[in-house]
Image 1 (cartoon, helix red, strand yellow):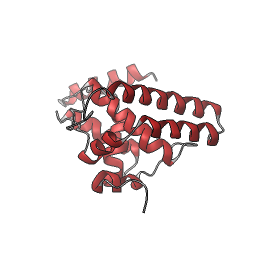
Image 2 (spheres, one colour):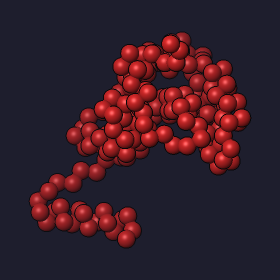
Image 3 (cartoon, one colour):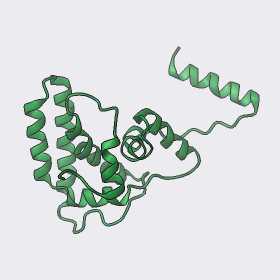
Image 4 (cartoon, one colour):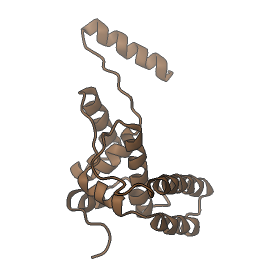
Length: 171
């Protein structure tokens, strides 16, 4: 089965049964779900991504939570450089290491491009704008990569403190 033929069959069956099919753009749903809904509702990142897709189908938009905005405003390129060095030293799998380093470099470039702008991220951005996707990506690099650089993390409950209370690291 190809993805296209499966989708076609679903649409045909839905039309036959009188069920409306709403197609939405699935981009960044995994990242948004992983950072916003997985820690909040203690669900897997896959279920959280499905939640984001369902919300998009309902016409809702994803905004970056206030505590994540505060975290992004405090994030520096130096911290990402430290993370890059940590990944270089600790990750043994060359493919995962290369992927992480590429993501970190993109995040650093994005932050450097914002340094000339005062206050960088002053208010929550509309989750569907291009620049908001960049902020979600930087957030993923800064928050998820340090938690488990060697493998894909499944439990994001540790992000709940940052999401709800704005606490990150330390006692």
